Each structure stands twice: as structure tokens, then as C-alpha cells.
Figure 1: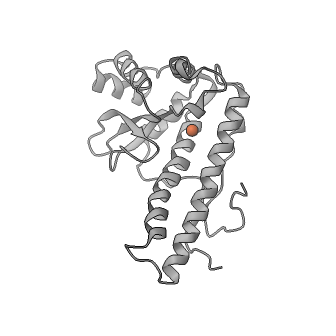
Figure 2: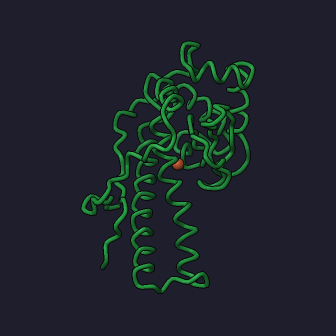
Amino acid sequence: MKKDGGAMHRARSFDHLKGLDGISDSQLAEHLDLYAGYVKQVNALTQELSEMRSERRASGKDFGLAEGTRRLAFEYDGMVLHEFYFSNLKPGGAARPSDRQAFGRALAETFGSVDHWQENFQAMGGMRGVGWVILFQDPITDRLTNHWVSLHQDGIPARCKPLLVMDVWEHAFVRDYKVTERFKYVAAFFRNIDCPVVDQRFNEEPGLRSPSAVRGDHTSISSR
Ligand SMILES: [Fe+2]
């Protein structure tokens, strides 16, 4: 089997997240297992599509190419968004940024106040359907906007940088809350936000490579 020449991915460890307020360790462990599955699927699909290219059997009418290409967008964004999500949580986190953080000041400038932003973000967390609520920054204008992303890949604004990522798929909370109690999970999410991480994202250059990517390392692919 031919190897793909691009980057493969390794599931990241988020062991430091144990002890979140309102998101149990067992819920978290199950969610991390699911994330590792996305990493595995990204690597498998990347390999399959690479083989199609190298054997020149890909055409626009080919079902495998079409399905694999569309699925890669789902699996890849599922992997990356979960990394953003787990990374913007921590035990002992905060519900809101401080006024000293650039991200907090930008929220107030864009939304009128941090409270107004939070109200809108949490309300979007109650929207019907499965997906994500994400605060994005346009790196050209620095403008901040809240977005709903369906599944993992539909509705991501081009070029924009994710700052705060909240998973509102039911798998993110059904061990801890009823499916009709998503608002309790959203409230718990807000008690665990790692605001310094969000502030760092606000200040860093866009387009940084996902830390899960391991270029040329084909031996460490997630075995899930
Ligand atoms: Fe998830």
C-alpha cells in the first residue's frame, strides 16, 4: 500500500481536563474516544484518496472519490473543532473574559458588552439541530461574530479564525443531562472556559497548523 506524502494526524491528549464543573469525567472520556475516532477516519480517508490519485482511477463521476472527498471535510473539521473545543476548557476556568484581555475588550466593542455577546452565544447554543456555536474573528477587520456550524463543516466563514468553540452535539452532554436540558450543559460549558487560551487565539497569527498534524510520521496514527 502506498503511503501518502502529506501530514498524518495523532490524537492529542487532554488528560488535564479531568474535574470540570458540570461536565463529568465519564462524559469527557467518551467524548475524547469519539474525537480519536475522527482522527483515525481522517488518516484512513487521506490514505484512500491518495491511493486513488496515485493509481489514477479518480474521476469526477467516481462514487468513491465523491463520497470520500465529502466525508473528508466532515471528518477533518470534526477532528479540528474537537481540538479547539477541548483546548478552550479547563478545570477552574472562568465564565467570562476579564477587561484586561484583548479578547474581552474586542467583545465589548463588537457586541456592546460582554454580557450581550454571552447572551447571544448561549441563545445560539439552544438552536435546534446538531452542530457547534463558534465565536470567529475576521483577521482582516478583527471583527468578532457568533456562528452556527451544522454537523462539523457547514457554515464555517471562510478565512475567519475560531476563538471560542462550543460543541452542542448531544454526544457532548447526554451522559450528564437529558436531551431536553442542553441549556444546563451550555451553562456548565461557560463555567469552564479557559479565557487565557481564547485571548491567545485572538492575538496569534491565523493559519497555525493543527498541533495534531505530524508531518511524515506514519507510525503514530491513532489505532482506534
Ligand atoms: Fe463532539
